[in-house]
Image (cartoon, rainbow, N blue to C red; front, side, top):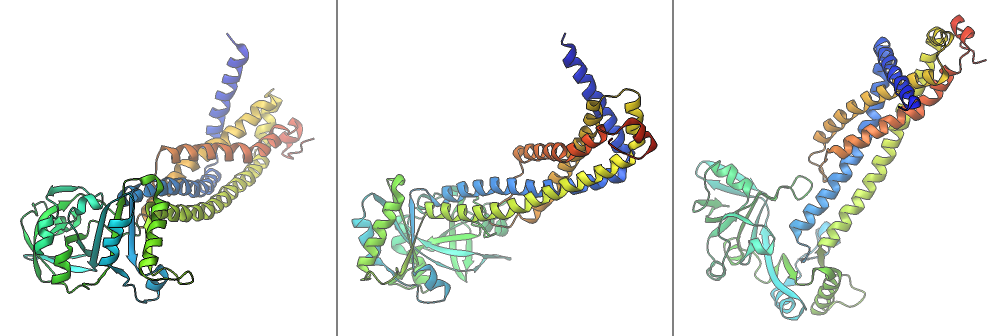
Length: 417
């Protein structure tokens, strides 16, 4: 048997037992240390959880948008922001893109109207948007149907008063009942529900995609007096999803030619791909990481300094205890181990409290762009940080306690000799 290993195990076991007794004996000091450490760990937990939530949101948005898709809307981002004219995409543009762009297999023009009242009997629900689409909306938007059928070519040809509804619309109007075949009023116009889309959730910023109604584009133009010349947007899908930047450049070149724009004139349209969404979210994620990282680092350092200062005070208050142990033959390693174990126990308590703080912060941030993902990774990082804080900031006070001269310590002077 390895006597050295056994001796070290006994030494560490005794150190933890004495450290636990000291934690219980100095409850007020322990409380303040745990409180300080918990705030630092909470900040760290939030940053780790936020990064995991951001990664999940990026994957979710790219999947929902479609890695092989391009979205073209009328007007530039700047022109729409200042309220200028955003009508620039025509039916000619759509037909030319469909016939001229290499690799395109879906070209789907769309229009929409904003918030609208949907009524069924005595139930009334305001949806975020009513979309006008061509046939096969579910395929176009990678949005499977839970039940029913999609908009068909026949629906589009005759301007049928039919619609698809999101999960939230069915829930609010029909509860647990089946919406298929029911007639609802959309802005006082009757529509028959033919399909219900699967739950999709938020698109970011708290805007629920499930509060959506989709009708045939021809019906949208006829029933709601939409512009017959210009379209709000076009969604295109390409066979080669690995070269989406190239496809976006081809679209830009073609539309600029069709719109007669010279090299000094900015685009009068906006092109968005899944890669653009990924870059945008990653940029926000990077800025958030820097901000939260600085905050977490500062909080961890502050909690470490609080621990160190309180432990220096503790060493001064416990000189007689340390002196008695050294007079009875306790080695320096034993004293050092006890104070380090005490620091680690307190910081571990702080890490658990910090994860709870982080969970509360996550509830407060549920409606932000990123969801907060509390996982085992957050817990492991918190425990690792807690141990590191305890060792780094508790080491010097522990060495100071271990270096006290027995006689001076018993007298309460605390001289290191």
